[in-house]
Length: 391
Image (cartoon, rainbow, N blue to C red; front, side, top):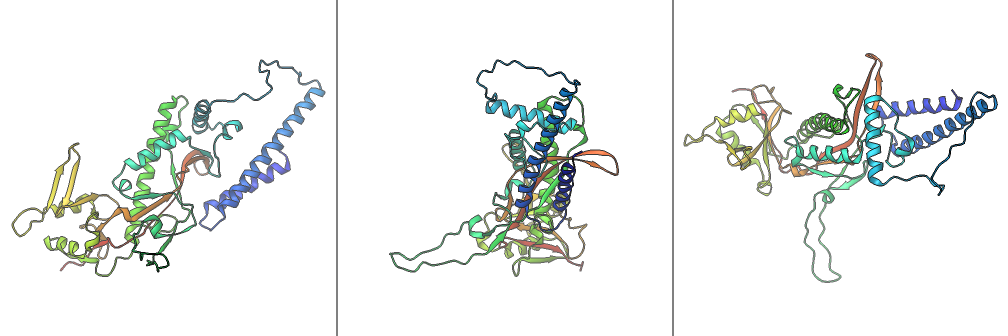
């Protein structure tokens, strides 16, 4: 192999190691360098191939042929956007299933960065659609697509109305707002081994790919939204510090527990806040009776037959991303009140897949990669119920 080609491959390996580490790196610089390395690699490889063919012809090892063509314009044949997309989707399937490289002419029609091969836009749209529609948490939060690393005023993602004085030359009333910075966090999930088959129709392959990615990423994203520590992942709601008087210690589950939680919720956050807890905790609360002997928990069925749970008239969202009351350790949260519209999940939804070899098992692993970050921009609606020592 050409010495320069070895150097390019070595540099790509170094960049990959840097990206997989937790160190702060300049992603834009790496993206530019990788693009230049790819172009240089293809140029050198093409030149060496042509030199080798010319040498074979001169030595009589390869017969030179003239190929006739009916394309009299002399221009490269162009595909329609629909044909180009279908061709890329089929090439992408071959890449995932059989590790076949995606042709250069197809890569030119798609934005490829440092994440291997970009998922076709048609398939990506289905993944995003299903992500937004699945799970209990993702449909409730606010989604943005700011560039990572930017410091953004919270009023940008959560608009604020302010009073201003009337008339020209008058002083406008200003409102001080905080700011948030979204970082680059890579979310990766391994695609299930059911994809590793020799024969699979395009539609079936895409459906399996969508289901596998959505299932894994929904769980990872929702887990981070609830309890993420903010280190290499979004910062979860429970990692925030509640405002004064909005952190409650509960030693015994009783009617007064919910009364205290409702009292701790400020009036201005009354409308859209919901309870979040496990199913076991809800069923324990549902068995509590008020002073008139009526259960405080309600389970109704909506028009579509979906179960709707509520406590004292407030909606309940169930999840498995925190401990139930019985299993929680002393000091650990087991339920909370929150308006999910105050949580921002920031991602550019530029998603791709990458293949690598597991050196320990010698398996070829296919993984999907997404860049995402998330933070709570307003903790006013957050009321946390933590387990206290039994009385």
